[in-house]
Length: 366
Image (cartoon, rainbow, N blue to C red; front, side, top):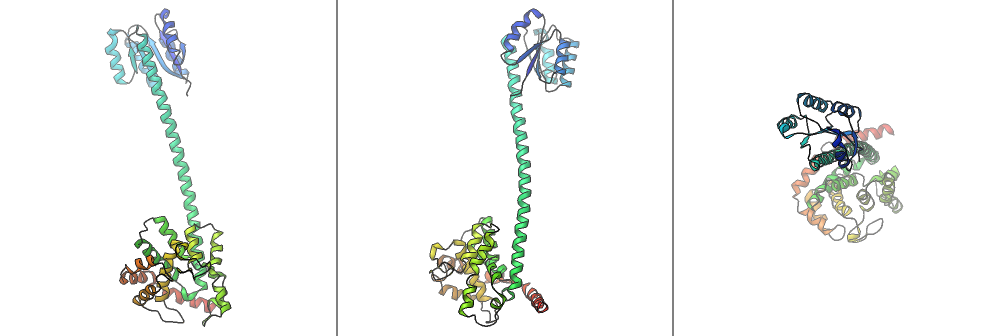
């Protein structure tokens, strides 16, 4: 609590001691021999919080002195013990802001109440100012935290983009697959009732990075034009675990890691790398599996022609309950095929030009 002093001037001085004893229960009291001296002490002492003046008539010189003091120290509370004949002057001064309160010179309880009220007001103002300072400090700390978070998010996004670019350069045939399947997965999640922007964003990032483990697969296997041998397939099947190990080092959220690690698990438990079944497979990975299959069926591959959306829906339906979560399949089928076509078009319309660039890049590299 702030240390406060009461400057007291009372005339005649013989009565000052009784009022001083009463006010001492509220704060330290300093008696002054004159009104002018009380004003000087109030100006010089920053701990002076209240001036109590019990003088003679509240005449023009006294009123001018008190009003000037109030202008010089607006934080100082001035309370006057005033004769009934001067009450009108006191009220006018209170209205003008030159005085904070008034009481009858003989009303000691009234003086006590007025001073206590002013002290309580100052205590409340101190608490308000303290709370205001604390709020400003919290806002400043939050602004700094937000700035740091934005910086980390920029680094995070740059890391994702670099990983995606590295993957796209490695695997030309499936360039754009991650972007397309990310859009499919988001649409499917929304149809299943997901509305949380944070979860949808994590789903998108997981979809973009789901095949990042293929960075560790040799080019000779990854870009082999013909069928893979059993030994080569075993190496390809390592990419979910390899990808998960890679992103775990940059501490991505669990949902992203779940898609990377479990996107080749099957609903009936025959998938890899852990052979999880049904609800053991994280929900985001089950959603992604349908989106991944939709793009795989409808996209061009060197070893087969793309099929249309109707064929994709038929195949996905046939694998409901075996490869795919039936609820995810039902949600997929509830969306018109035209909507899926629109998502695909909007996502892939720039991809052919980029593929041409990377093919040229590979030729130059060789």
